[in-house]
Amino acid sequence: MSTARQLASYASVGVGATLAHYAILIALVEGADWRAVPATLCGYVVGGLIAYLLNRRHTFASDRPHAEATWRFALVAFVGFCVTYVLMSLFVDRWSAPYLPAQIVTTVLAMFVTFALNRRWTFG
Figure 1 (cartoon, rainbow, N blue to C red):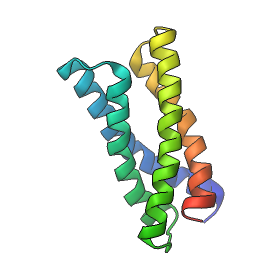
Figure 2: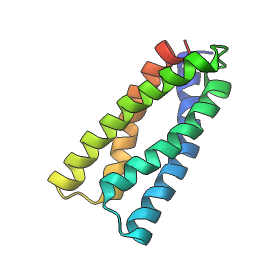
Figure 3: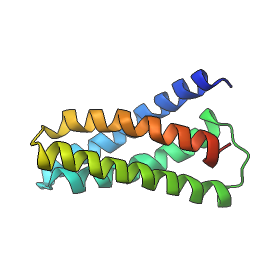
Figure 4: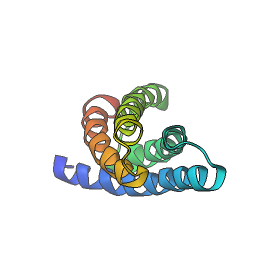
């Protein structure tokens, strides 16, 4: 599969994972009165689980054993988690940006970072 098609597939899978992420984020902030940064990190973990399963099978069609791919994906997800933490902390806590627009920008930036790492290292 070409890089462009993989990126499109990765983005499509990301939509589903992001919907789960955002649902948890909004539920925790609006329904449970959590602060935005911890809430978004909880959502990130759930979205990451969904993303692993779908990207392994559909985007990268990887035959790398789960025992190897899982820890690599987790490490890449941790990098994305750190990117998310830093950007959301800057946007929301430091610059007082509304949390949802900040999360949208953060998601797009983290997507490019994690796609490149997953393509070359996790599933490559």
